[in-house]
Every structure is written in structure tokens, then in C-alpha cells.
Image 1 (cartoon, rainbow, N blue to C red):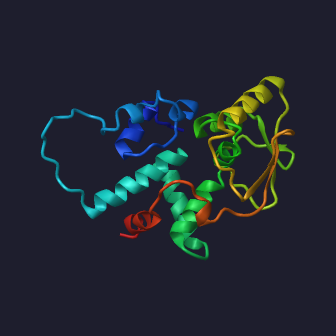
Image 2: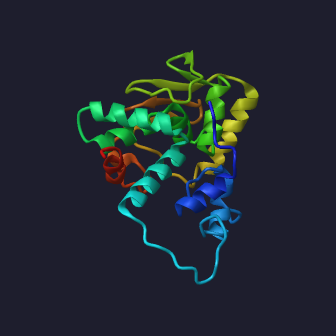
Length: 211
């Protein structure tokens, strides 16, 4: 499946917000967005800028969420259609589905410093769900699922290093319960809207796809 192979720092600059796509670098003074928050492309002093239309605002919000979770357009549209069929608010259902992705769960647990690294851990068969190896980053966890590391000494060291980096810089989500010493975790409940730690206006996305 095709993946964006360009500079991820460029994506942060395009969306005008830090997306934390490069892990530890995003938390340091080396962050490109911190040093240069202007959007990519030629910057002409005094250049007249047109206002952004409602469609433009909706599109940018959708692109921002896509890039935060690292999903392609077709995947995102499928998540939206699934969210529409679920009871409750479509926008909140959409964000809950994205939060339940296995690569995002690994990132939230602090086992990886970025969702890109978390996706690699899953793809390389280092993650187990309910005692079975799962190598699909888009796998949706359910309430009661147990998550553990497929024991390999080198991978354990990588995960523990990640925990040290993120330990004092991220609030642990209430919908997950983890044992960092044993590198095990459990899904306590399905994530709700208040569990999303990014500034997202899901109503704009719903309006975009409802046209």
C-alpha cells in the first residue's frame, strides 16, 4: 500500500500545527515546525492571501486528522462510513475508531515514540493481542483485549527506551491499563471523545463528507 515518503515535518507546517510525526525530535528544540512554522512553498513578503472558504477549512481538518493517524484517503473514507452506521454521533464515532487502531494504541502506551515507529513494531510481528501475533496496524482493539510484546530482547530494549523518552511528556489515557514493568496492557473501555488529546473539530469533517 502506498505511503507518504516525503518530509513529515512539511506536513506539520502545511497543517499549521505540530502533529508529532517524528517522535523524540518533535519534543526537542530541533523540531522543524518550532523553528519554521510557515506553510511550505515560496514565501513572498507582503503577498496578498485570500481568505479560506468553508470547504477549505473542512478539507484542512480532514487532512490534519488523516496525517495525525497516518491513514490513506480510502481508509479514512471507510472509517467514516463505518462511523455513520454506528449509533451515536458520527464525528465522535470516527475519532473513536481511529483511536482504537493498534498502531495508535501502541503509541499511546508509550511503546513507540511516534505512530510511524508503532506501525513498524506491528508490521514486524512484535505485538500480540490476546496472546496471538497481530501484524495489521489498522486492527481495531476491543474492550477487554490484552496487548503484550512478542518477547525479543532487542525489541524490549527499544520499547523501554521509548517509555523513558515519553514517560514524563505524555498523559496516559484512562481507557488503557498498562504494566510497564511487564510490557503488558489491557483495553479497559472503548475511547470516548474526551480521550482525544488533539485539537480536532470533527464537525467540519462530517460536513465535508455529508455534501
